[in-house]
Length: 35
Image (tube, helix red, strand yellow):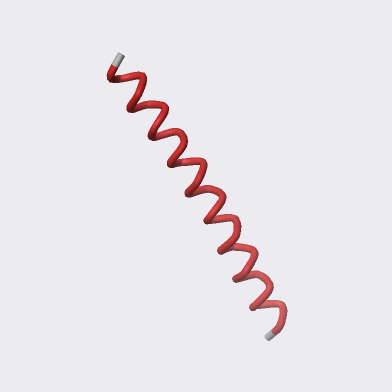
């Protein structure tokens, strides 16, 4: 039972990190295109 909770927590954290990474990548690409 505890393992399932950890897995769900890790998956939710990974999704949040992926979303943040996509935002950062888009910001970097827009900055590069502006140069």
